[in-house]
Length: 244
Image (cartoon, rainbow, N blue to C red; front, side):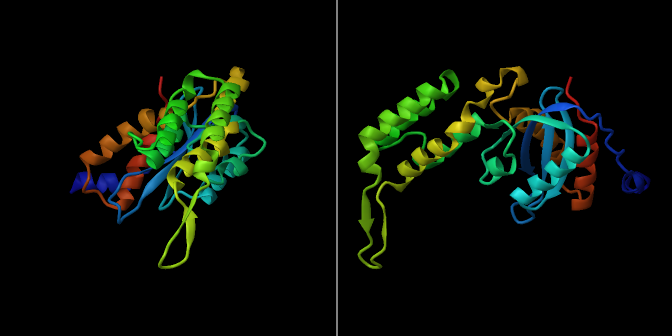
């Protein structure tokens, strides 16, 4: 009973800020049952591996990112670059900053569309291009996409009509979506090469593996905690996080 009272009375210390130039990595994680939908959005300085700001959320929206972006700018931090998972709307939110699309998330997006083992030759060839992402340049990558489109351009524009509804849709819409994803994100996939002085990370792994993974292990040990105590534990963990 005494221990429970002490935990309830405990207030995590306020984050002490040291405004400076930062290489920003942003991502969110969720750590409750699907129906509860609770998580935390985190902004991390990749250079010093320090968690700067975070916000507890029920859904990952551009508005939540905007709130933290405004806070971090107000605190006096100077954003040199931003690495994120490619969520729609984020490139526009961080317009004016060098932005880097996470390579891991880009690969996951393509895999979601064409699977690990594509059945169609178009998907197989696109997969080959995708898995050279980390060892190529923007120019070569674009050239490979151009060559792919010359071969499969008409193929991905083929349409099928639903005989019951009369609705027309792309026959190979998943392969088409995978290609369009790479085209849309192309300008943000090689930012790290253009701004080498900033040491821009190409993935959000500093958060996913470095911060979120051990945090979730701690939470899982105390899975019976209330939502309020979960947030308190996360606040304490993130407030003191600075990887050496």
